[in-house]
Amino acid sequence: MIIDIRQLHGIYLVCGKTDLRRGIDGLANVVSQQYDLNPYSKSLFMFCGTRKDRFKALLWDGDGFLLLYKRIENGRLQWPRNMNEVKRLHSKQLERLLSGWSLESSIKQSTPPKNTRHQR
Image (cartoon, rainbow, N blue to C red):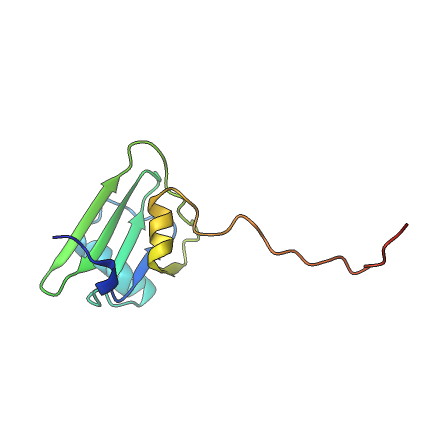
């Protein structure tokens, strides 16, 4: 079975460290109890442990849960570490994350200085 991202109701990245020894029930409990989201919503929930070279994903496909596990051989994920946050992603962000790119832009908006007079 291949997951069609267009059929998902949402893609959620659980920030911070999750104990990846947890199975389906443990991860579903994290989703429902810690973040007040519905694990049965046909959404993809992604979790990362201490090491950033592997993650688990949980998906309810209508008649049961899929538990996906991926270990990256050469590289690390740019996983956000704010423990109290879950981020809703769009498909391009998921693609960027799985390609090793950060979710956040490295270019920050700046404001011009208050004194804008030009000196000659």
